[in-house]
Length: 155
Image (cartoon, rainbow, N blue to C red):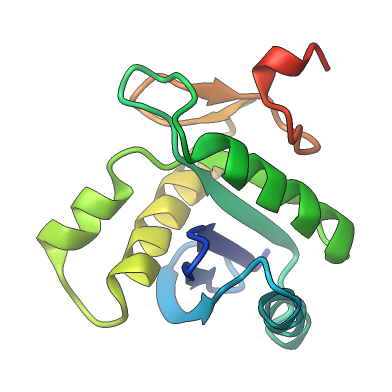
C-alpha cells in the first residue's frame, strides 16, 4: 500500500511517500500553504498521481502527550483532507520527528524529512500488526476517521 505522510504547517507541509510495498519512506517536495485552495489541489493531485491509498497526518502533541497549540489546527486540516481526498486520512503522533530530521540531515527539505520519519514510524507500527496507531512515546490514537475537535469533543 502506498502511503503519503504529511508534516503539516500552515506555510509549508512536509511530504513523504512510501514505496508500493510499504517498507521505505522517501521525502518528496513539500506543499506550500497546504490549507489553501491551491495547496489542497496539489495534495489531491499528488494523491491521485502517485497512487496513494492512505494519508497519515502528523499530530503535534506536547511532550506529555497532551494537545498543543498546533494540535487543533492540525486536526482541522486533517478533517478537511478527509473531505477533499478519496482515501482514508489518519492522525499519527509526530513527536520528535522534526528533531530527528534536524539531526539526521539528508536530502529533501527538513519538513519532508520529518514527514519521512513520521511515515517510518507509522509503517513500523503497521508491520507489527498493532491495533492502535501511536508511537514509542506513549500516545495512542484510535484508528478511524479524524475528529477535528480532538479527544475533548466527546465524539
